[in-house]
Structure formats: C-alpha cells, structure tokens
Length: 247
Image 1: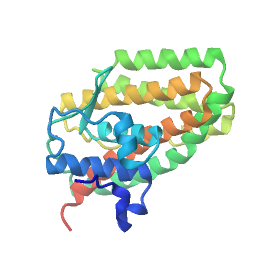
Image 2: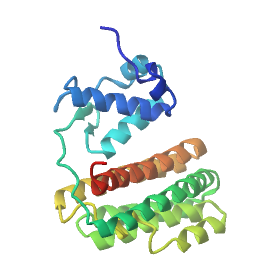
Image 3: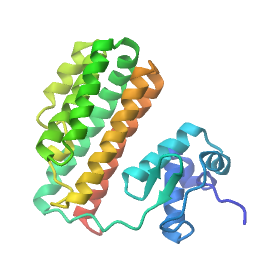
C-alpha cells in the first residue's frame, strides 16, 4: 500500500510540516501500525516518506518524545512507548490560570527564540561556562522540585543575558515569578516518575540549546529554543483540553 503522507489532505496541508509529520506518526501509533516497543523508521526513511528535511523529522520526533509517546536511545533510534495514563483532571478553578500560562509561553516563544539566536552570535566563554554550571546544578537537583525549578529559570535568564541585549533579560525577569509553567500549575499531581521524566526531557532540550549556542549556530539555537518552549505549550494545551472535558 502506498504511503499516506499527512500533506495529502487539504486540512493538514495548511499545517506546519513538523505538526503534519508528528500527527501522522501519532495516528500510526493510534492505529497500531507502530506498537509499544517498535522502533520508528530511521530519519532517512522518514525524510523519504514525508518528503521533508532532517530538521523537520527531528523536531517531529522531539515533539513525540515530549508528549511521552516515544523514547530515544543513543545509537539505537526512537522507540514507541506504552500509552501514558490520561492527564489528571484539573479543578474548574485552575482552567483560568492554565489559560494564562499558555498565553505566557506564547510570549516566551517569540522572545526567547530570538534571544537564543543572538546568544549564539554574541556569547562569551565565561557566559557559556556559567550556562554549563547551571545545567550541571539542574541535573543534580532532579529529585528536588524547588531547586530544579530555580535552575530551570536560571538557564533561561542566562541565555537571555548571553544575547548581549539587556532588554531581553529585563523583559524575561519581568515575567517572574510566572516564568515557568510548573510554578503556576502542577500537571503531575504528585506522580514522581512522571515529574522525573519531564525534568529529564527538559535537560535534553536545554542541552540542545546549549550545544547550538556553543557552535555559534544562530539558526539552530533559535530552532532549539522554539521547539523547547513549543513542547511546553503543547503539554499545557493537552492538560487544558482535559480540564475542559468533552464539548
């Protein structure tokens, strides 16, 4: 049977390529074409199937990983995970704050993506060392939510300072203490394993941003930051949809 690419329909043709690819892969997982434990096709195979670039494929895979649908194993590829339990239902009183956080993340996507791009072009060796120290502290504090949240915020503020434009850091600081979604809404409801998995994903995404900055790759740094924050937005949107319930 010929491969059905997501661009084949009028509806998906209007969507960004990354979303088209990720949604088609999600549909294949939902239909059982790709089952828990199966390895996803290679990047080259996915590029050929969907007619897209390597960057699009990697962003789609990162989006699926952020959604807990796949895991990536160094040197082995990406594997489908068992379905995650449904997100916890939020109280009606929490819908408003969650909507506010989604809007806040949208502002951060625009602001921080450009800051990361400039950071790749303008950072100093001392600033990169500071970013590495923050990342190391974050990794050591995975089991301590309060400490890890502080290091997460420090990472983003450090990238903003590395842009060489103090207004980025001032604007981002002005968003505090609401800089981090998990400072406003707890999506894990005491699920220690889910929270640990989430924090590990954050570390991986931070590492991608850091590496692009270190390589002075402005476009990749912008894309990595945009993907990182877009993943956060999508997690929040899913929780918001679950909180609202069926229409």
